[in-house]
Image: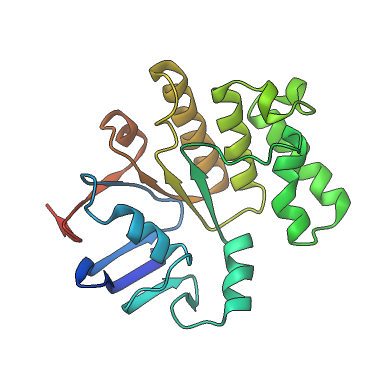
Length: 220
């Protein structure tokens, strides 16, 4: 299967410190891959570069047919809204929007037809089993419920790939295991590629392979 994401010879420095040192890897459609490494190994920098948040000094990041290091800002912004999304450790839900509205927000940015927005949001609320909490605000939700809403929001644009950055790091072990099962199931159902950044060996159980980053390079 041809890669949906192809990263080649990625380098990034901050001042005299070289954080990424020629990183190369690829991800296939529907594949789930864990990214592990100690603090300071370059995981966050790599995630920022392949997510279009930061530009590498050299190398390429090809998502589907677009090289994120070469395209203009407008095209990059469109791709970041529709083809790649993030799930974070601290949820990052908009506090003034309900669960339903948080899930709908990326679709509204994309100017999706209102009827389709309603259908997608209702379907996702059912999948994450939060129909009864659809009108609750983040402050009224538990940590596990907020993370489920964050997962649904990430999936609502039907992205090609999700970058999950320590998505269970702020949850207790039981809730974290439930969230991992939900991510695994939904990614399988939608054939969404997942790159899971984690310090937890337990979290890697939902992934088919693991990449280990050390001092800006992959190691065996």
